[in-house]
Image: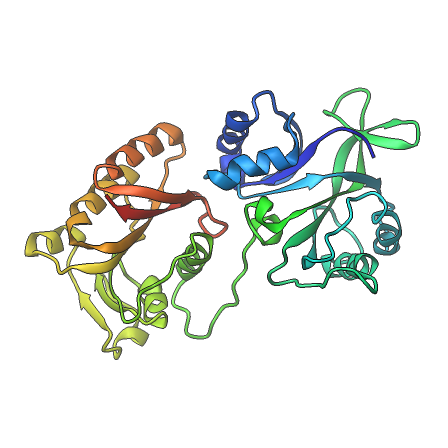
Length: 364
């Protein structure tokens, strides 16, 4: 154990530069020590993990998806005995768990190893729970033991290993990087922010996962028997999810909807563009969603035009497709357009977003 403060940060690989900008905004002087895997970074923020987490809890970042502290570093053998070794070695190195709070172990393996995350999770859960320890809750834990097994740049000092920037005095070695934190501090309750959903037999498109994840991340509640507008609805994935949540949906798209929606009386399909519907004089809605593939600024202008048809208690949700170049300026321009009619209540690059971000809007 040493006095260094490390954080493992997860983001989309194509947004590493934007994620690091967000780190610098709250922790000037933070250092990138290593890229452990695609979109998984080891940083030295220069401030305690609790301070970093507190700043982001009040104003979550857009591109940083998940963070976890590193409070213990243990070299691994890369064999089937590693989980048992971690179960023996980690408990005295990490802070004590709060027995009044439920916990889980979340393990990510970023190297080819002869065991699975489940094996490490099981061994550590048994080691940390004990007779009078906290209860295990893998679905909604209040505190999390995070373990990442990966190659990292190390330098030995006496009986301990120190992490440092890769260089002539360091060597990349297979290690376990572990830390304990409150689940609320990690930005996501899922390991690495990787929210997985089971594919349903009636699923229309993978885009459904984006909407389901947004419901969770922004803690959105849908009104009973609400009236929703789905702009650019085809083939109907978001419309299907909204129907599952009891909404009556007007699906606007000149394209066809999936045949499985054809007999649903709760779906009204207008085979016109969103711009044409504006000219007709739309109805008023409890929520408006937009997953259209168009320039983010044009999509924002369209949403502003629809703002007057959103009921005062309602909300809107949209995805923004960002270009490969000039992403930050385009995003700032897009937000400026949206603020003419909305308050930006949340914006995150979700696990299922890939190269886009999801924005939650409330009427001004």
